[in-house]
Amino acid sequence: MRSLPSPSNAANGGVDSWRQPMFAELLRGIRLRSTVYFRPELRAPWGIGIANRGTIFHIVVRGSCLLQVVGVADPVALRAGDFVVITQGNAHTMRDALPTQVADVFDLAKQHKADRNGRFRCGGKGAVTRLVCGGMQFENGTTNPLLAMLPSLLHVKATKQVGRIWLRSTLKHVLEELNSGGAGAAEVVTRLADILFIQAVRSYFEENADSAKFGWLAAVRDQQIGRALALLHAHPTEPWTIASLARRVALSRSAFAVKFTELIGEPPLRYLTRLRINTAAERLRLSDDKLNAIAAAAGYESVTAFTRAFRRNMGMTPGEYRAGRQVTDSPP
Image 1 (cartoon, rainbow, N blue to C red):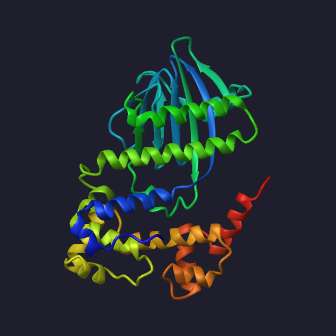
Image 2 (image 1 turned 60 degrees about the vertical axis):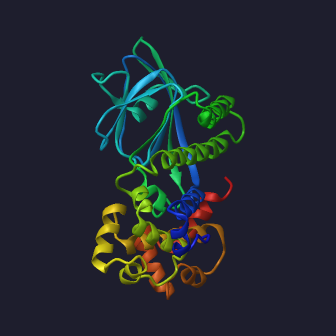
Image 3 (image 1 turned 180 degrees about the horizontal axis):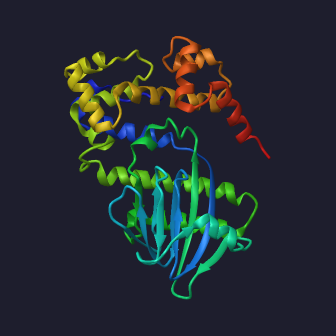
């Protein structure tokens, strides 16, 4: 993990001196392994539902609709050019109007034959809405700190502002690739989805960094918990304890533990484990390093302790994870 400014130096430069490097580090860790997408063309009245299937994105190519996400209080109005990500895989519906009944989108895709570019048509005889919908599979999705800290819904609105030129140009490129049906189009779309997701997260950071009342963004802004996060990200292999972290940020052990958990949503040492396992999983995926070297670099005193922690967090041993990545990444 790349080094960050030390919190003692960061204190002199203000919150941004440790916040921006952490943002950059988290964004660097995003990597999509694959996307699965489909392209419904829907005529009003229409309604589609998607159960909990992991991280899902939607692009509104034409028309408008209402999005309802379980756990998000109010319906969200979407229009052409909008990009949304349901980050935690919450069940959700999309429809032309709230009274319209919904059907499972995967059932509809099976019932209506898609053309060579993946488009299928259904619904009534009214106004047309076109979507590109896809599932995102992330490397290290289980342990990536970024995915755990995001809100249930990221919504990047279409706008004519200069700062959103990236959205229009990237969406245009996605559609061109999907329409081309050329060799490698799926791989290109996956990389473009990578870019869209990173940009959506960056927009969320920029728009909420100074206003968030709770969660990771509020924690980074907090003078004490923000310094603790900077310590953990800069030195994840250190033998941190709640007491040692509390001393470094001038809080009592109990006050630090409570405040960290309230803002972050998980205890300090569980967050540290996520950082360590995420770093180790990246090395397993990208290198041929031996397990004892990876375990030591992740801050574990033995391969046995590392394997136990890895299995607990990832649901498999490091060897099984490495073998699975080799199968996934090998050419067909």
